[in-house]
Amino acid sequence: MRDVHGAAFPVGKRGGGRFSHRNENPMNWIMKWWKKALTLSIAWIVLIIGVGIIHTDVLLAGKITPQQDEAISEKYGVALAIGLVVIWLFAEVFWKRRKSV
Image 1 (cartoon, one colour):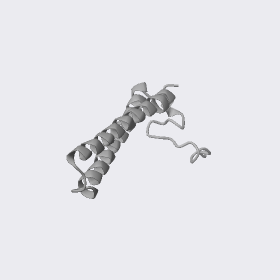
Image 2 (cartoon, helix red, strand yellow):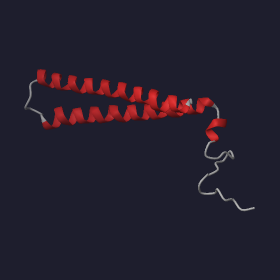
Image 3 (cartoon, rainbow, N blue to C red):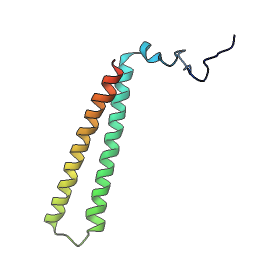
Image 4 (cartoon, helix red, strand yellow):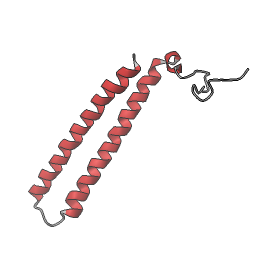
């Protein structure tokens, strides 16, 4: 018999089709959204710290006072914190809850 749904409904190793997630362990979905959020968090931290270091230590080196450097670094810290909160709220609302339905 010929498989008419070959390309449209790929079958994985477990024999599930497009909707095989309904038969999987719910912990797998939790870990997936958690891993996405963790990966984005790490990328955000590296990005903000990298941009902050380049901005204050390379581009503005010798042009600003230590107090100005501290103020700029504080702004990057606030951006880092806000970004992390946004990433985890987005993960909670759109990834975790979507998978639990």
